[in-house]
Image 1 (tube, rainbow, N blue to C red):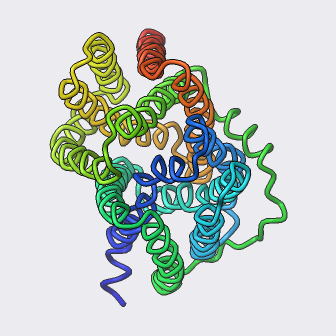
Image 2 (image 1 turned 120 degrees about the vertical axis):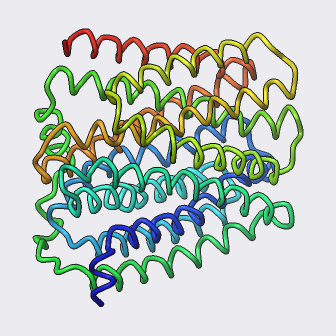
Length: 392
């Protein structure tokens, strides 16, 4: 018991990483799943946007809920709810059924995404907050690539097997999280959900931002939209244009995972501890924009694959920096809980717009989304330059 309480944050991150493996098992088979149902190409964007629409709305709710509900309850409800939403998605045969499944998934996924970050913030001191969030973010990114690999390999056998394994595993993990937090935490915050108003939570979060804080969120919004546009289009492009099997998505994501693990264990910790975070974010967005520019003007298949992995790796490095920069905008834990909900909502809004644009532009011109990603990442870079100039 003492060991569990002493190492709560480490064990919690381990549980979150295991969950991330199963959360991402369906992603590599989604393009093939949409092809299998003979739906329009733009559905890969519409499906992702639908999930993020509800994630955007629910993130404010879950951010506020972190101050008013037991975290054990939040994780149990959100993980089991997400598993049930995946049953709807798996059984879908029409566009509207897919949209319904994705809407339900978005409503519940905000719970564990916001809840996990807030739990780590609340369990950390101001000095350890950045390191713990970085450990969490790195673990989630690396674990997600493992999920891609496993899901892609299983999806080559049968498209529905990753769904089934994911659903069962998330329900079990919901119960495990509930038991673990009930044992290790003396949770007394439980005022219920009836007082929670997502619109008031959004207003509260915005009011806690000064002009510099708003510039940070502007950069996060455009950088994340660029990430979504590039990632979604890349996944669909290699299936649609290059005719790669689902396992290819998984293998490529696994390669990114190895790169992410190595770079984050070295570069990210250095950037967090030895540099100004916003300047590091500025350098990474500039690097990503330069690589995307080369991709746009080079049509060779292997050059495209290699440089795309570099871009996706750059996006994976910037994510821990973004989370840490948000967590340091306030010293008050309750305010940070709201800001983390706002952070997840901003990411979700970027994903809604980005995935829709990627899907519809891809249907007209398959290389178009990569041009859009370049424009978006340049805007993120300009926002960070403005931040640096105004923070002097």
